[in-house]
Length: 84
Image 1 (cartoon, rainbow, N blue to C red):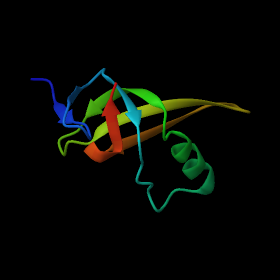
Image 2 (image 1 turned 120 degrees about the vertical axis):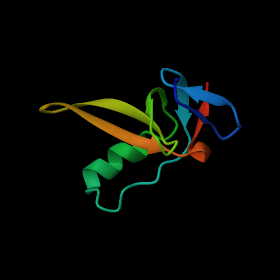
Image 3 (image 1 turned 180 degrees about the horizontal axis):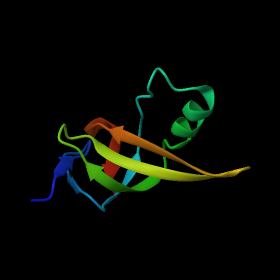
Image 4 (image 1 turned 30 degrees about the vertical axis):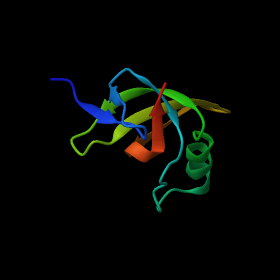
């Protein structure tokens, strides 16, 4: 059975669905560079990578950096995203 979660409007969301990020709860241990990348994700549209056992919806973004690429992954609560 595929895991599902509900977005802020109560719509079902599954792995592979596209969502808009409305808010993020940053980890207090993040350094400034990580925090800046995560905050930049707000308003972005991403594909759902997975839904964990607690119902968090995980999304990722790839960044081009001077020395290659970086990835930011965040787990979103229902109030922090909406299905597109």
